[in-house]
Amino acid sequence: NVLSATAQDEQLEPWARAVLGGPGGTATVVSPLRRSQRLGRPTVLAFRPVQSAERSVGYLVQRFDLHELAAFVAAATGSEASTFWLLDAQGGVSIKTRS
Image 1: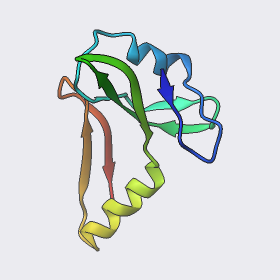
Image 2 (image 1 turned 180 degrees about the vertical axis):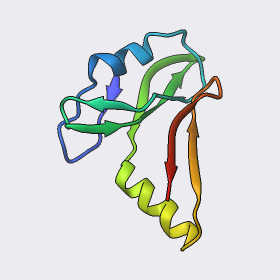
Image 3 (image 1 turned 30 degrees about the vertical axis):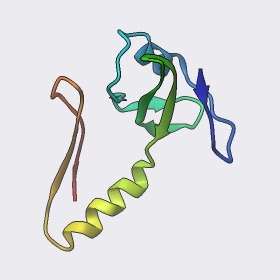
Image 4 (image 1 turned 120 degrees about the vertical axis):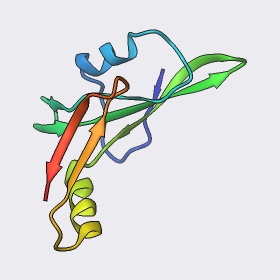
């Protein structure tokens, strides 16, 4: 079960459903950077399991606004050159930006 609380009609694409197909758990899972065919742009999703009586009954899903994230990183560093990484669960680099 996936709860959607947005102004837009949200749909999980097959690659996003595959992220949920792994072993269950209580940890938040962040997807790799993927191109959303539906949105026509890159996207990253975070899945947080919703628990009831010690079992997952659904997921709270967040879609990161990558433009907003890039603007936040640029504003936080001012005029200094900086690099920002988003790591996956294995410590691999999912996103690397340079401002």
